[in-house]
Image 1 (tube, one colour):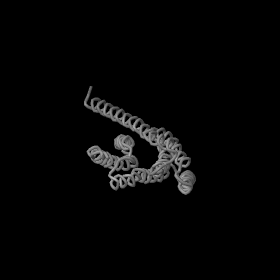
Image 2 (image 1 turned 45 degrees about the vertical axis):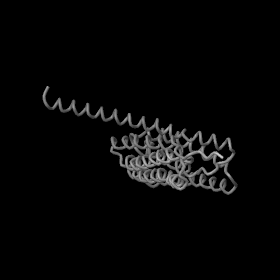
Image 3 (image 1 turned 180 degrees about the vertical axis):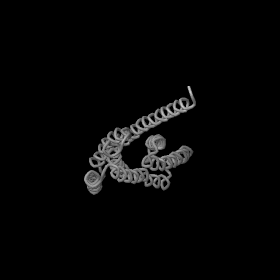
Image 4 (image 1 turned 90 degrees about the horizontal axis):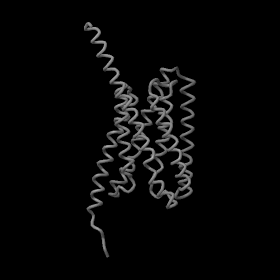
Length: 239
């Protein structure tokens, strides 16, 4: 066996290990994303029990629905090659976000809020329909991937930024009541998994937004740790 054979074997082994790590990161991202999708269930049990959305915001679910639809489209073979795990997870995510948004419409605090959320939901499907039409009718495969890729980056950044309003509420009220812990934790774990997945695939459209999501997830977890400790230290008032 000469040095060329050894070099080839080393290259193949390195490639297989990279593929294995890449697949593992993608599967981990799918698992954590599923946990993220089901993490609002306690919040919605409370909404159904009380018959009102209270101060909970529908915006994170609206943003997430549009993001899931765009990322699902990005992962399809006639848009991108080799990222089918992106399509599977976002198909499931879109179904969950649609269900949560429907719950916001059904249990809206008033008619004005119900109309607003319904209008935003309709807007999501109009925008997604336009994206599908333009990407299929105007672009070839390579340009289509770039176009949808940039849209997915923008939608992911908007989705990760949507909790900023909740962060502002936490700082203002000094309470983590309206920032569920498991939602923040799941977002962080999902983001860091897909960041690794994107880095291993050398996919700019995956690792840039998920890197931003990782940072925002860390900020939310730090805020939760800080304000939940303050709430525990606050003495009970007994009259």
